[in-house]
Amino acid sequence: MEYGIVSLLPTALVLVLAIITRRTLESVVAGALFAFLLMDGTGFIATMAVVSLDVLRDEDVAWIILVCALYGTFIALLVRSGGSTAFGHLLLARLTSKRQSLLATWAVGLMIFLDDYLNSLTVGATMRAVTDKFKTSRAMLAYVVDSTAAPMCLLIPISSWGAYFAGLLEKNEIAADGQGLGLFVESIPYMFYPIIALLIVPLVIMGVIPRLGAMKQAEYRAEATGDLGAISDSEGESPVGNGGPSTFFLPIVALLFFTVVPNVDLLRGVIAGILVTLIYFASLRLMPLSELFDTCTNGLKIMVPVLAMLLALFIFVEANDRIGLTEYVIQAVQPYMTAMWLPVIIFVTMSAVSFATGSNWGVIAIAMPVAFPLAQAYDVSIPLVIGALLSASGFGSHACFYSDSTVLSAQGAGCDTYQHAVTQIPYAILAATIAALLFLIAAMVV
Image 1 (cartoon, rainbow, N blue to C red):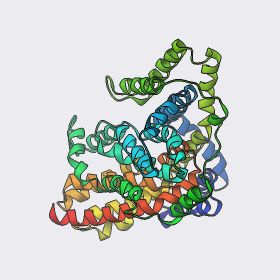
Image 2 (cartoon, one colour; image 1 turned 135 degrees about the horizontal axis):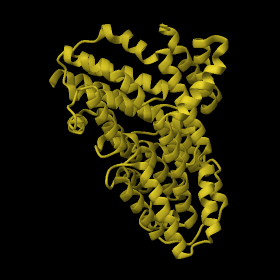
Image 3 (tube, helix red, strand yellow; image 1 turned 180 degrees about the vertical axis):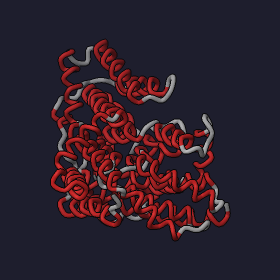
Image 4 (cartoon, helix red, strand yellow; image 1 turned 90 degrees about the vertical axis):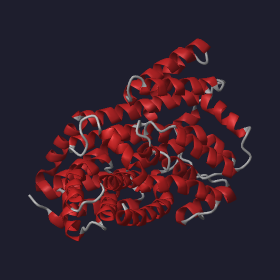
């Protein structure tokens, strides 16, 4: 069944509710319910129950939920041992200002590029004690963290994003078997959004780009009253151990090593990282074994709200797929495409869909079979079109109120998800505007 413009309504409902109520989880659930109501009438509850089970059975969804849950355990161990505190003290001994602490956060984010989930949770949890000392709002910290998560993963081909999109290029027969990663690398210079988003961060930190909108208010409150906008978390209720810097660096090195060798596998890496961490901490006798295991459990508990949000998001994405939102938008803009306008139209429309749905990888996978034939028909550079598509994916991940990256960055920084979303969106829109202009220029010269 063709739903046409009606397919926009569930997403519109989510955005309106999120703005009015400032509650992202409930808004996404309401949007999914509304979508199933449109499709199945009075049988919508049964349909949603079936879809929810199908989503949970999906191997990719199960993988994401497991990885995020175990990252919670891993980070809880770093915090409880005192390792992240020791690392913070090392930095504080060398940092003398708020500006330096945020630039250090940005630099650490550039180094953790294997996966945006790992980046969002690890950098935020590690650096918030440092930025707190200089009266930095948690919203500003979350913005800096989020801006090095998906954008950095898009620009580094050995990241989880590089592996996924390289596979999609081969699946769509744009690249030959085994050549997807090479084509991905060729398109990196045209990934204008992640490049601009990364470069804007130090300009915001240095004051070249002023504080805008809700970010200006959040920073004023932090500096004038000391209200950082932090949300309570159960980590802070547990005493912190006296572990040194090695209790931070060795677990991180172990996690990264087992993630990369012999190939990039985040689930294997975090499992191995937790085991190495447990053995190392037990050998140091930092705490009784019972406390070590309690810390692991507490780490899982801390991630429950995030996991609930991710599950709701995946159900909402499935609802949008069934109602045909992406296909409708592509068909609506297709008559306006020309050789010059194709890259910028692809970037703008797919950015809008990715932002509205919270689906970063799925939307681009749906768009590729349409975008590439159009590029070939208009004789537009394939790497340029890839850059437009992946830039759109990066914008959606970065800017959407309820995307996984937004939720996890807020969790890592210890601030409210809605507050993080509204404070960073002016900067995301600024980066997207510049990127759109660059796609228009590139189409004329490439």
